[in-house]
Image 1 (cartoon, rainbow, N blue to C red):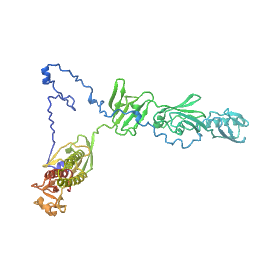
Image 2 (image 1 turned 90 degrees about the horizontal axis):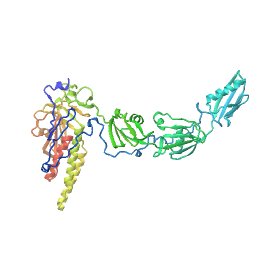
Image 3 (image 1 turned 60 degrees about the horizontal axis):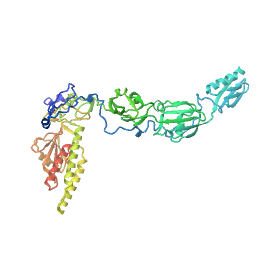
Image 4 (image 1 turned 180 degrees about the vertical axis):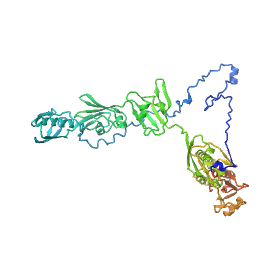
Length: 576
């Protein structure tokens, strides 16, 4: 049976908030989501007397604020890309220089100085390691010189096999292997940390030699314009962004005397916000599209909007786009791009606890109300105190915490800074100061509950739920809890006809610090009432408040007021 059916005698009320505007005039906008307020054209009395012409004000809207493309704009100045590390800054940490390759792979092209193993058996017996001479030839007995320069291992095997079988066409088996390659020395220069000449093999990658040189200068070097020079000609151009994003990189075969030149860094933009790492991104040219930038940047999940700030020919600009509209925007050198998850979810999650059946969490529409949820929750019949439903809310907890902090701060400011005119008064002030400091310290350790009273006089307010709300559906209780300044805090069985004082006496009576004139009654629904002349109900808590141990009437009144505030927010009577 749902909560609503159990509550046959209860009615749900929907509170209506009335907003009163003491303004001279208002004009309702045709848009359902907004209201605009306008003031009539009035002239001040002094202006009427002087009959000076009134300056005309251009009331044309400067922007379509509903579009969301004009804000919000951060108050801090535009970020300079130079203050961010470059994209790929962690690339050169010694990982590529660890081991030099042997240069032996299927694509390696033979060059003078290499060694090739040739074996033949059958009608022709031959087993020798043949060097590649300066002309790029190897010499095979019976066949003569054979040019293999510039060929890979498969092509070399085919040529050697063809040369031998042309002389011995039958019953001959041939095997070849590129056994060793000549090392090369490559110059690395430009904007690197340690320019120099470094040893390697022809098939080592550009990254190997760059790492040998300490990596690219992060402030001045380019990650996108790296040239491999040979005889004053560019034989390869490397863009490390391709490697960082896609894992692909140009693999030129190096020769002795080649030069790797790292060009000066090109134009850059700053990318910040909801990205996995804030970086400076280098451009090829002076601009790129938003779609290209999204491919480069690693966005966090949930990113919905982009703030684009920069300078154009007509001055500074700042625009705020939904992510799908940002794809077509043009980003220029020096711009700052801030990604953000700025889309309000249309779904909230609330939690239910207490006496009910079903799951503990519910995903609801953002405009869901309490009655809709209660109507869908089955509860144990004759076991649930549906008239005592309460709700905990984070925003209420924060307000309670802020109010309590403000009260404690005023208490310290008022009484700890007061001056004393005599020694006796100074001693009293010192005692009061110690009392206040101890009280404030204990009070600040308490955590407000954020309890929102929604059930009152057997009626439940049909409030709109918020994300993170915790709804408590209490079980019918047969007990009364006695706490605070009593000798033996305990729970007692509820007995009709017993008064508050009767229950206090059953708990041993008041302590010496008790204020028997101030006893609170905390209901199951979270409401706090004065226990005097208030009928008890099962599930209530009797909270005996402490008396302020001071003869300063003004301080005592202030402490009592804060004690009540703490008790309402935390359901705890702070010991003074």
